[in-house]
Figure 1 (cartoon, rainbow over the protein chains, first blue to last red):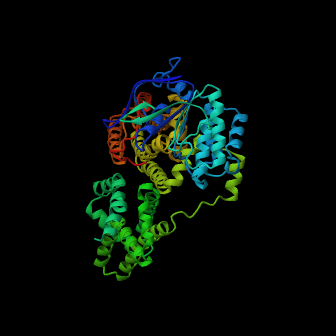
Figure 2 (tube, one colour; figure 1 turned 90 degrees about the vertical axis):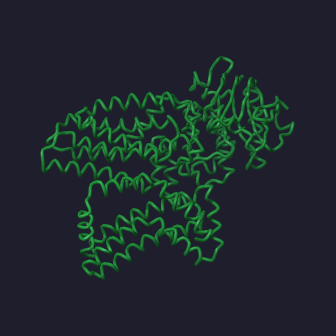
Figure 3 (cartoon, helix red, strand yellow; figure 1 turned 60 degrees about the vertical axis):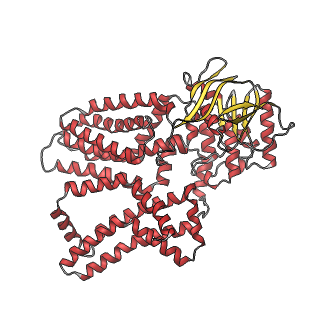
Length: 209
Length: 372
C-alpha cells in the first residue's frame, strides 16, 4: 500500500500537481489526464527520478526520503517513451538492472522470452524500432520483487500480441497483490484486467472518477 | 540575411559559440595572456616560412573543424532541431550554398587567424604561401559543409552492426564501468581525444622544465592540477549521462556510496592516460613518495566537481567558469606550499558531503537550458 500525504510538485515555483492525501491499495489504478497535466511528472516523482514535496510512504513506513534505497527497491517504472544509450544492447541494460533489482536468471529469461525480446536482445538499442524499445522498458518494469509497478502509457507502439502478453502480466501481478499505476489514453476494456479505481489529473490535482 | 540563413545562424552558429564559450575564453586567455604581440608575429613568420610548416596551423584548423562537425551532428540529432531536415526539400545547389555560409561562420576564428597569417606572408611578398593558406583554410570549411549536407540529406543512414560487435555482444554484456566511457567516446570523440592530448601534453611539458632547472614539487603539482582540470568537462558530461540520458539510474536502489564508488571507478578509467603520463614523466629529482598524493589529488578533483554538480543544474559556461576559479585557487594554494594531501582531503570531504546531501534533491531546470 502506497500513501501520498501533502504531495506537491512544482517547477520553478509553478505548481504542477498537488495531492493532499491518497492511498493506492494493491490492484490496478488507471490514471487519466490530458497531455501535460502532470501524470508523467507524478510517476517520475514516485519512481524517485524527480524530487517532490510531501510524504510518500509504504504501509510499513518506508519513506521516499528517509529510506531512499529500500523505497526504490519496491517501485519499478516504465517510461512512456523510454530512451537508452544507443550503443547498449537490451542484454547490457537487462543484466545491469536485473542484478540491482535482484532478479534471478530464470526470471530474466522468462521476461526476455515472453516479451519477445529474444530476436534483438543482443543488438544495440540504436537498431531498435520504438515498439522494441517499449517492450524492453516494459519487461524491465516487471523485474525483481516490486510492490508498485508504474506503467506510463504502456500501450503506445505495442502490437496486439504484445498487448495481450502485457495484460497477462498485469493480471498476474494483480493476483500477487502488487499495486499497478497505469496511465493510458487508450481505453482499457473490462476483460483486459480488473481496475480498482480510475483517477483524472485535472486542475493540478488527482480526482477520483 | 535570408530567413534560412537567420535560422541556421541561430541554431548552429550562435549555439556553437555559446556552447564553446568556455573553450574560446581559455584560448583567448592563453594567446593574449601568455604571448606578447611580437611572439604572435614570430610564430606566424615561422609557420609561413614554408608550406610544410603551414601544416601546423592546418592541423589545428582540422581539429577545430572536427569539433564543429561533432557539434553539428549532435545538434541535428536533437529532436528540437529536426525541422532543419526540411532544408532537404531545397535544390541541392541552394542547400550547399546555405550550409557553406554556415560553416564559414562557424569557422570564423580560424579564418581570422588565416588572414593574420596572410598579412604576415604578404610582408615578405610570399605569394605562394598566401595561396597555400587560402587553399588550406577552405579545406576544413568544405569538410564541415559536406558533413552537414550529408546529415541533412541522409538523416538516418541506419546502423550496421559488424560481425565482431555481434560476436562480442553474444559473448559478453558490458559492465556499467564501460557505459559512460563508451557513450562519451562515441558522442563527443573530439572532446575526449582533445582533452586527453592537451592534459597529457601539459604533464609532459611541465616535466621537461625540470631538465633545465631545479624546481621543487610545486611546479609539477600545478601542471598536474591544470591537466586534471581539463578533464573536469568529462565529469560534467558524466553527470548528464547518469541523470538524464540513462535516468533509470536514479530510480534504481543503489546507495549513494555505491553511486560514488561507481563514479570513482569510471573516473579512474578516464584518467588512465594522465596517471600513466605522470608515472612515466615524473621528474627524477622529486621524491617518488610525492606520486601517491599527486594521483590522489587528481582523483579528488573529479569527486569535488561531481559532488558540487548536484547542488543545482548549471550550464556548461557556468561550469567552465567554476573550473577556471577552482584552478586559480589550486595554483595559489600550491604556491603557498599547501600539500596536495590537504587539498585532496578537502575535495573528498566537500564532494562526498555535497553528493550525499543533494543527489536525491537534484533535478534539471528546463529554464536554464543546460547542455545535455
